[in-house]
Length: 169
Image (cartoon, rainbow, N blue to C red):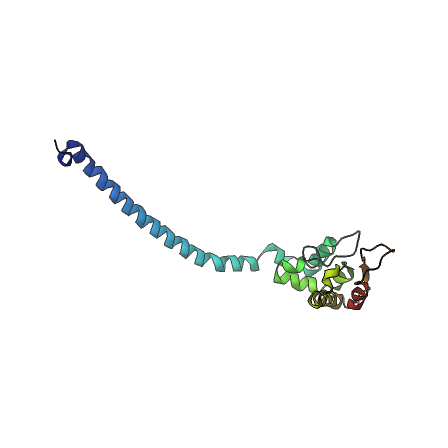
């Protein structure tokens, strides 16, 4: 008996054809789903942008936001020149917060200048530090300042970068 004419093969013809039809339908549905997802993404982008404009945080009065920002500052030491801490971090949240933070001089009235390692005597490192300090001082406007500087050296040795620290100020 030949396998090509076997009754088992005859029984498989209809199911195989049905699987092919189902696979074609799945491909069509997947294509339609992909197109719908693209269309949804195009519609979602402006929705998200407009939702951000009516966010409850945008309705908080500037004075309240400033008070919240002030409570973010460290209470045990001067604010660090660190992009992961207030006040620099607050300016990285959104344009509105940056505007509020940069226009609140009291946020910038305390500053701790971190020690410069010996290898940081490179001109570009010093220039970056100088620019950060200058921007910080500019934002403080006429507020009384509290500036701390810790050189990390004991009194028996001297820090070759201490003079550079002081020049930054």
